[in-house]
Image 1 (tube, rainbow, N blue to C red):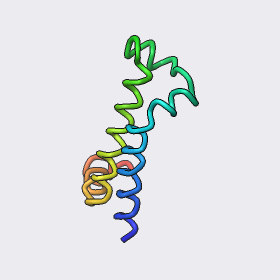
Image 2 (image 1 turned 135 degrees about the horizontal axis):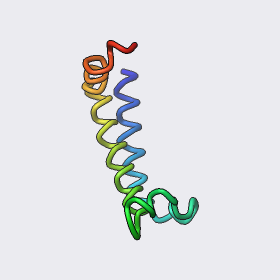
Image 3 (image 1 turned 45 degrees about the horizontal axis):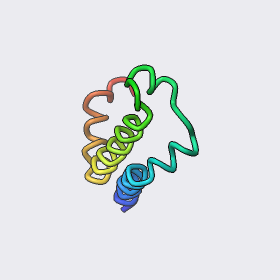
Image 4 (image 1 turned 90 degrees about the vertical axis):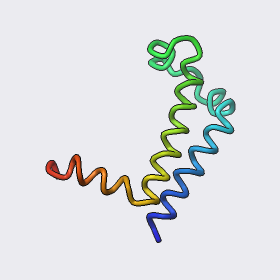
Length: 78
């Protein structure tokens, strides 16, 4: 049950970041590395990519596929 709540929270956090990225950018300002490596408007692109990543990882965590992916590829190190 806990993994479903964490996954749902990740999806909600990603959705909120996508919807309110303007307010987040106004609060944090420009992100230097995003502007340098992603070009002009890189901060906006970074927030969009971060929100999508939260949604994808939240769905993967809720479905249990992130845990199996983590164990398969990185299990030997831990």
